[in-house]
Image (tube, rainbow, N blue to C red):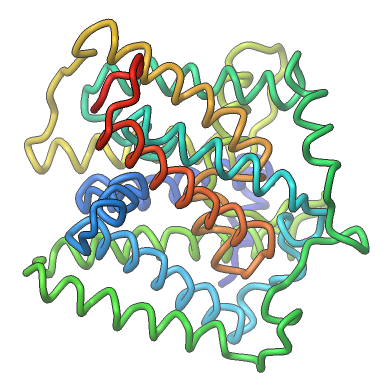
Length: 355
C-alpha cells in the first residue's frame, strides 16, 4: 500500500486525521447497524443469556483478533511498535480503571463508543453523557484528577519500561493469536445461529473488528513514510474524546489520527441510522435517569483514562494485539458491569434508579 503520494500531497498530519476519519466512519456505520455494545453483552451474561448482543460482541472481538493477527503475519503491522505495547503499562490501573468503567457503562447504559454512536442517531441523553465523559477524561489526563490517576496507576506497573505481550509471556508460537481468533469466531457464529441472527448483522459486527485492524494498518503504514514520529494506534475513545474536545478549545490545534476518529464515528453512525430509519430525538426519562447517566459517564471518563482505554480501546483494540494490561482491563470491565447489573438493575439498590 503506497501512501507516499497522499502524504506528499496533503501532509503527514492531515493524512493521519484522514485515516482516523476513514477508520471512524467504518466503525461507526458497522457499530450502528449491528447494535454493537459491550454493556449489553455483559447484561445478557449477568442474566444467564447468550443472546444477540453476546454474539455481536464476540464476533467483533474475534474478527479483530483474526484481522490484526493476520495483518501482523503478513508484515502489515508490527505489534511491538504499537503505542499501547511500547509504553509502561499499569496493572493496578487496569484493575481499578476497568472496574470503574464497567460500573459506569451499565449506569450510563452504554460504553463511551456506544454513547457516541447513539448521539449520532439523535439520542440527547448520550450527547450529554458523552460530554461529561470527555470532560472527566481531560480532568484525569491533565486536570485536578490527574494526581489521583497517577497515584493509582503507579501502585503496580509492568517491568522493563514496556507493556506485556501475552503471547510472548506465555511462550505461545507465532500464529496462535490468529488461531484463537478463529476459534472464538466459530463460537460467536454458533451463538448467532442459535439466536437466528441474520447475515447483515453478522457482517456489520465483523466490520467493527475490521475497523480496529484498519486503524492499526493505516497508522503503521504512515509511520513507515512519515518524517516525524507517528504513533501507531487504532480505535479508542477515552483519549481521542478528550483530545477532540480540546481541539476546538485551544489555539493552534494539531491534526492527528484522534481528531479524525471521533467525527468519523459520528458521521458513520449517522449514515447508518439514516439508511436504517433510526434517526429519532430522545432525551432523559427523568431526574433519576439523568443522575444515573451522568454518574456513569464520569466513572467511565476517569476509569477509561486510568485503565489505558475504553471498552473498545482496551477491550478490542488492545486485546487484538494481546497487550497484557488491556486483557486485564477488559476482564475487570466485565466483572464491574456484571456486578452492577446484578446489584443495581436486578436487585435495585436503594437510591440508584434501575434501568
